[in-house]
Amino acid sequence: MVVVKVVYEDIADKIDTQYIRAQFSNLPNIGIVFVCTPEGGEEDDWTDEDGLRHIVIHLPYDEVQKMPDARPMMLKKAKERLGLVS
Image (cartoon, rainbow, N blue to C red; front, side):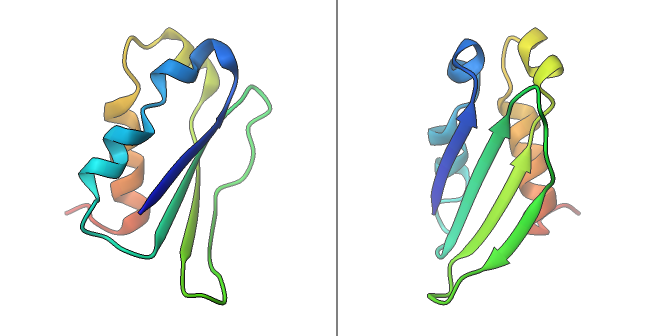
């Protein structure tokens, strides 16, 4: 699993990609991009020619800015997009 972030510097420490990578280390061929900018954007999901599934997850910038820890929100959104919510 590959997890990266596209964020503003002021919230970069709140977007913990290593935490998410550790939670889903058993899932190969998945790349998650967390985007957290004031501009927002659209969620996306596709599989490339090598079989790697790419998932783009947007986090609400204003909410993350006020949170002491964004990991619970990141985990919830990742589980939803991966279809792991019961």
